Length: 143
Image (cartoon, rainbow, N blue to C red; front, top):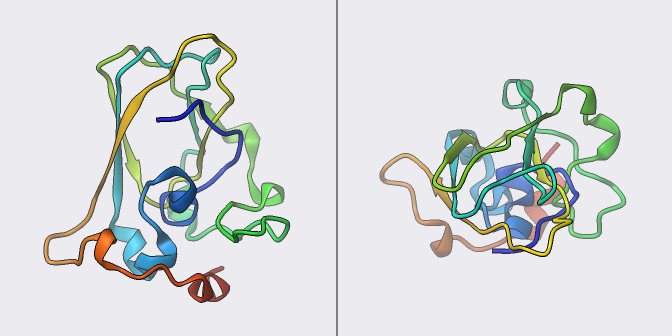
């Protein structure tokens, strides 16, 4: 539960930053991951509601930002912000999207928290993310 970030990422790439599940650990299995966000508070533009880039999962993995020392964030030069859709929703709503969806939360500009619960789902039989070793070298092999 944080105040939000103004960075684009994907579940499998920025997951380490956002806690969504790491593509650095999951590799190609990231294609099968789905994310669900349960909104405990109203999500508004003012408090940094989630912004998604529709269609981005179909375009495949997104190039990493060469300026990001973690290697986990999406290169802002490849994000078509004109396609961005901000999802405002009342408390109690659930937003689900594919693990490779390019997304971000904007900064929270209010005095209140924007709390949510975040769940990642994957096919049965796969090891839990907590059982996988984070391997930063695998990031170099990702597009």
